[in-house]
Image (tube, rainbow, N blue to C red; front, side, top):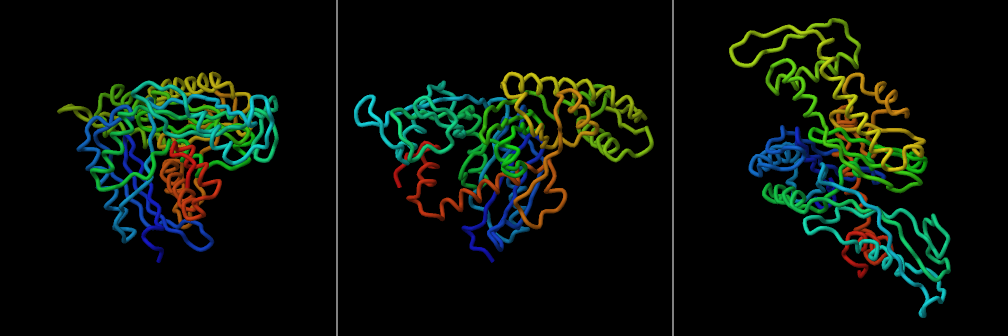
Amino acid sequence: MARKDQFVVGLDLGSTKTCALVCQPGEGGKLQVAGFGVAESKGWRKSVIVNLDLTVLALKKAVEAAETAAGISIASAYVGVAGTHIKGVNSRGAVGLGKTPGATGAVTPDDILKVLQAARGVTLPQDREIVYPEPQDYVLDSQEGIRNPVGMSGARLEANVHLITGSSTALRNVVTAANLAGIKVLDTVYEPFASAAACLTADERELGVALVDIGGGSTDMIVYSQGSVRHTASIPVGGEHFTNDIAVGLRTTIPEAERVKRSWAERESDDTPGGLLEVPSVGERPARVVSYAILDEIIQPRTIELLELIHDELERSGQIRQLGAGLILVGGGAEQGGLLPLAEQTLGLPVRLGRCTGLENMDENLAGPEYATLVGLVVYGNRRRLLRDSKETGLMAKLWRALQGKGGAA
């Protein structure tokens, strides 16, 4: 049995469901699933908390289920954040290497720390803060695209960094909800970044790939090229919008619309026969029988709208022609029936569903795209744990603290 401090916990607070996953290190250092809990989310609208009490209640239910399965109490966790308040911006920092202006010198690890901290020094509005800074590459004098400049000589070192920023209020409310549920937040992690840790290979990041997370309140995106993050964005359309369209179009309740949406998706993916579905009406009106063809007429326009918004965002990123590995879909809305072929047709890219790796003894449900963020949070957290357990004064530990804005001192 692993020590309690070796357990890694991820919390995914979404607009439709709240999930908790507890993992422990197994043989060979690979994580094993120890406990999993899920509860219906309450208190969210458009991917931000609007009722703190309901959010905490859902979180406690998910955590208690995971604790019971794992046989431990959860004290701390890595928590995912996403939504339209998240924005990405590219930044560049620079430092001189010689002791006098224009003089040359060899790049040292301390120079890396200084230039990364300089790249973080962008002026942000008072209501925004950095969620995560991701180094892209370095420029030494006029030589660009350097991955690791340590030991190389030059007069001026620059670092290109992608900064993921978010609303301070929205981020603080997520942390507050976790704290009120008795959980210390070890780090807030941009959800597509976490999903990428669980679903993407190094080759895909190098070749160029876009990971798109279709959540309840929004669709969030991260684009990789040449091994680094090049673009992040959030689109204000998610699974809830599809559910609302069905509720209005069929004049039924939101819970029934969600059930109908899932039935439609399962029918499309399994290609089962039969074309009718009974839908309860609102109030005292009798239930009606509708065809799947009518559902398709309601859902397809919203699907095309979302795909066109994704295409526009990829064009805006300037990376759409560098996506050799295509598009990876994750999130609860990724398994919507007929989405993959329509996405390939609309975007002109190869598209596949994300599958999670990195954990042992995962069942098919947990390994699917719906839980990519949750699995990614513990994969990310385990990397942090291994880094923490290694030499705290090592370069990688110093770099991590520099990126998190905590300085390079041991």
